[in-house]
Length: 72
Image 1: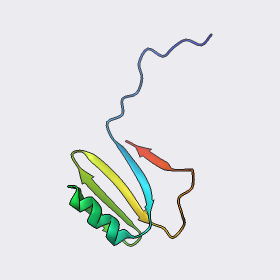
Image 2: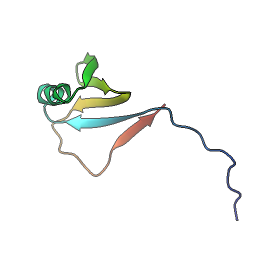
Image 3: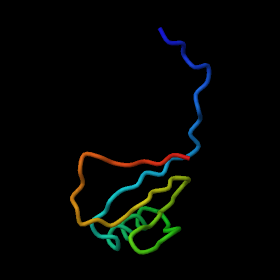
Image 4: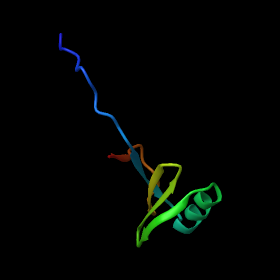
């Protein structure tokens, strides 16, 4: 039986990245619910609210069962 670690790393933030179909519509939606766009470049944007950060990138591909998340 393996010993349990005495302490676990603490997550201070998480930044999920989502594929979106229409970047302009998506940004308008998140702004309506209180998010602010803090970074935008071709093919990528970051919206934030209350310490929550979402990374969004436009994609013509329908979502699959897989996702990607970055923690820091």
